[in-house]
Image 1 (cartoon, helix red, strand yellow):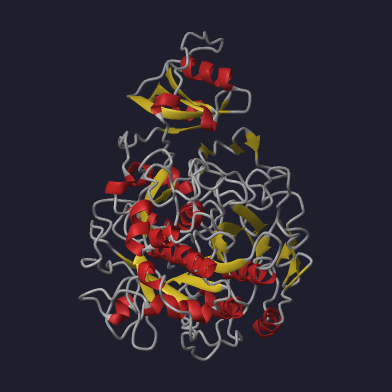
Image 2 (tube, one colour; image 1 turned 135 degrees about the vertical axis):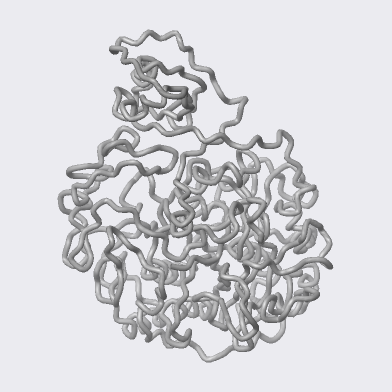
Length: 620
């Protein structure tokens, strides 16, 4: 399985569930809490529970209490000989020290919804200075020339950028009025009202921040010299979030195609004006782009006037004859972006292409590269990535640092929004020509690695819009859905979603779908490919004849897996039972494909780059 687009800053290679398994790095709940906000719980409460004597080394843990059960949880910890420490109100819990031997029993104790070992964070700087961090968006705006556009009055205002990803969290930088518009939630979390649209994975929030984040305290017209507030590349652009991935980044090609189709058909909805599509998803499809269904969907967006920006991937450079670019970036008719590394300086003369950035060959190479090494963007507290990698990726309590072509793609998506505001009538082909013709060639780098060079908005600002970039043969979309997946598949309990079948178990006729997409009719009243999605959630459909609206999720217990700041204990999550008949009030049961059920297993990541979070070995 391959992942593309993003390297979170913590390891030597892209990190996805497969890599984590190979490294035997268990997922841990890692919490970042600002010291000034911590409240020390009084430990004077007397437990009425019977006291049991436990042994073992004192262990620092994070305890999550059930709703309204904080007092009971405190008493249970004290009854086991533990000591309660700081309150963690963000998760309705607290830190405590308990005897190691008490851990198992405490997981089932009164008031305790979850308990896990407390993984200490590395201390964060008390006074983060973006001007000295070349990976900060403040510095990236200068390296790319975005600040030149701001000075000229172009900030992305009025331009919608669709982000097909894992959703967007409501964190400062993405909560100003009109900043984020939610499209449909097409993810596996869409049936849970408390998770709809939210980013439980952490990837989409990071991308949205780079593209168009704007801190609430930022002052319009004063962005250029603002060294205090977070600002993305196009701080006044609108983010249209279409969620397709869940807390583990799980999604299928069919969901991504459906999302692209939705963006195309709703691009002109009131308040959207979608002119850019950011896509950090891809597969190692071996079939030609000229027939590939995913590439075809991306091309339909391009033809409709949407500038499609796709990450080349993080598979690195092999030789000038072998391309490691992913689908759909391998399609020459859209914009493919690789990564550049500033090498710790603000000057461009020493910039290079990092070893992780996927490269092309004479037939197809990246169109250009953009900053993608150690990029600081918005942090999504409690997300899977935040829980798992905060000890190495966290910059402050609100910022996280990551590396990869996903970050580079987001930089170019933001850049595109600036140019579109400057030239409202520009076509995708003309915009591609403006950005590639103004790019700065990097010394010592092959064209197969950098394409036209590194994005240079300072130069693009003065480029006159003329002819469009040349195109190649267009895709027919008549290839196979299975071919589009490449080696990237959703797997549950050893059962693989494969073949010409979408996530609902509906047959996928690529020829018929291509015709519907070309006609702009693949979506009809919430129905896509014969299944009702109800605009924001799934309703009344099935997987291989098994209904999503039956009795239970295979009746399985989900234990020991972390989820959005809390931990599964027995069959409860955050104090709510998930066994027997329902999931957060919605029945999902007996669902299967190929006759095999989910049986409560985690999905494997399908095509999202999970990446690299600022480990010293990360950049090779």
